[in-house]
Figure 1 (cartoon, one colour):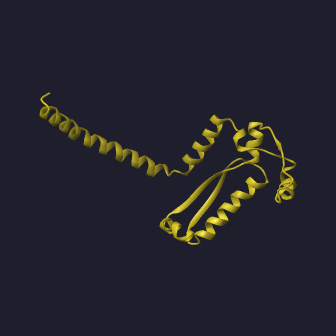
Figure 2 (cartoon, one colour):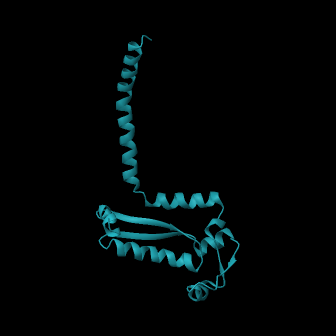
Figure 3 (cartoon, one colour):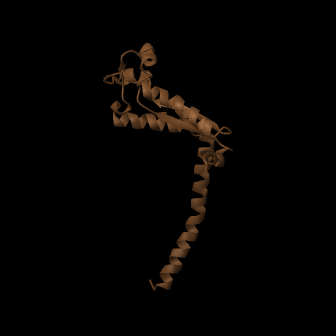
Length: 146
């Protein structure tokens, strides 16, 4: 199966990818590269890649310890021009803070009206099924002589 064919089953839905990467020359470039590749493999798809972390604002917010930029990376000169000689790793964010960032990013993508309607429907269905389940349990008990 061709790579292009794998994506066709998603052609009727918008696809949003939440991207988490290091703030370094390669990490910054990978976000754009990911969107470009996915668009190339699925030209009829509505794909958006949204970089969630690591941003320069998050670097400052969390006071993350810097690393030196790798000079061997071909993307380094453009990175240095924009951000300077330091870079930062995503895993430097404390795990509990990264969890909050992930949750907030996912929550922001949820249509709250649809979510609420789904939860309400699920609760209704559960209440409708409870008497039937209790009846079946009683029937099983009577069959087992309890």
